[in-house]
Image (cartoon, rainbow, N blue to C red; front, side):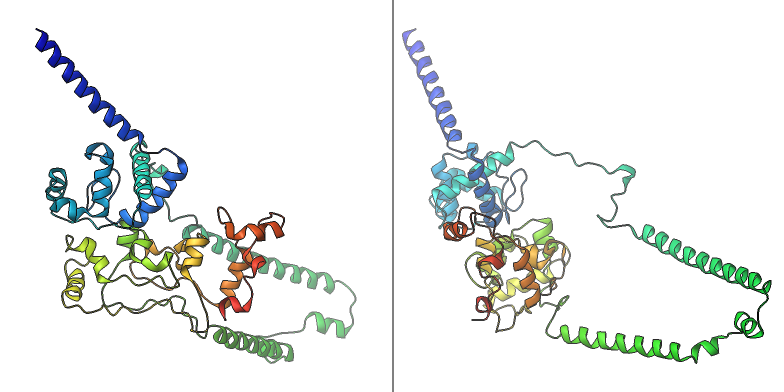
Length: 407
């Protein structure tokens, strides 16, 4: 009996230790909004290409991973080098490897413990959010966006034409009424000739006033056309060349919500955003060999480029002249400018085009309107003090100086 009681206490103690360990494991994950926000940025830039929080994508859904994994240290080791953990014979790592088609996770050796914990904090916060029920638009028609529907525009145009015709009819009636009124007066022969003077299209066309008006309009339109043509020299807005591989941003950035910074790795670090190498593509396409639109043909070109060690000859779309300096890291990493600000709704484009003008005037206009993001950046402390801690626009800190872009 004593042994049974002793065994029962041991089992209870073991269960208590397991509960306490799981509780402390969950408590490690922060609920601080700042840490969750940091985790969201890291997740979207690095993890979202292969993972979702509540559903499986290429890799497993991450909701509850902090409960399923053996320990938080295990998660950190797996994130930094999954292949090493799998090769060690770890049972849980090999189970995940087999369940996900033997797809190796990209190694994030540069991630710190705090960064991994921030991602866990974001994952936990997202997992605990209730499911959103999509609202159904009344009448079953969601419309075409925030603009005025084409039907209404046509109705407005027809209404304006009707109003114009009515005004002409009223004007004609007024002229006839005036003529009848003047006929009742004792007018001289000269005045009668003026009142009842005949006119025709030919006489109007041959009149000096009409000829001057036509010449002035033609000259004005020609002059404006020439000026507009001169201003568009070197401007490639709308340029959308055919690429060697039919890559769709609408599928990758739109449907699968892959963060721009995952592929364009230089955007946070330097001047150029970088065109992603085929190796980045193969992080996903080692397993995904059939495209949503083009089937296997386009992905096969990427595979061939990797196997033959040949670069993909992408056609450059956004190309500033050599005399202009632009730094992506300054705008994206420091100023916090979204990619869509300059490149438009890239997540809706099957074929990418140059969305903005990218002219000097366009850049200057932005510097005149945009406020400097000084929050949490000690670099701007002295400038804020000089401006009496008031909000500063880019032009206030030298954003219009020639040497900023033409040094």
